Length: 216
Image (tube, rainbow, N blue to C red; front, top):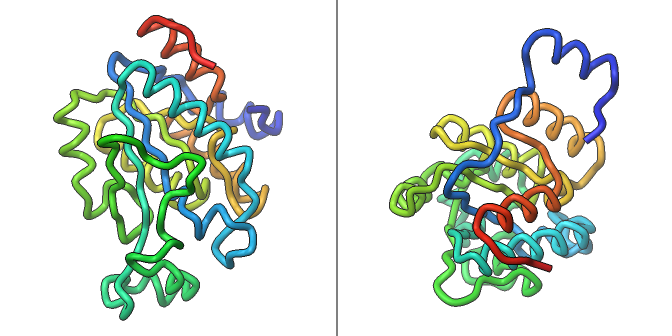
């Protein structure tokens, strides 16, 4: 992405923002593209049609090459006793009740076959889940992160991905937020400190070149 010249120059001069690239075994993690977040009429949602389209394309290439892919959903018991202070900070999270359609993955990018939906309670896909064990089992060295929101669960997952030792890749056009300001600011920060911010086309080209074949 194009960052403000003055800011980009300041970071570059101080050795921020080097590229980590993709490794030998990438996995795709689709963050919280559940109905509550993809429905613009929901108080948790926004218009993320483009994110759904790009994520659908990423899923296609990862499926074509039989590379690991995972989904996350965030959901709570009716009492929200499992939501801790999160629900006090964001009362709208009470809409994410376990077992309801609100917390199901949007049908445009719904899991197929044995693709797993990892249930989480907080922002990061790593916190309190078995994602790390899954990635280790499949010898993953690179995490490609798509979904919502850029400033929340995508960012938290990107930070934890780095901290768990993975090359971290965030396609800017496959993540989204409720407002452009937080979206762009967090993409800049991820690119400066935690992973590579690229485009969906870049990921598709790399995967096809590395694993053979052509994808849509």
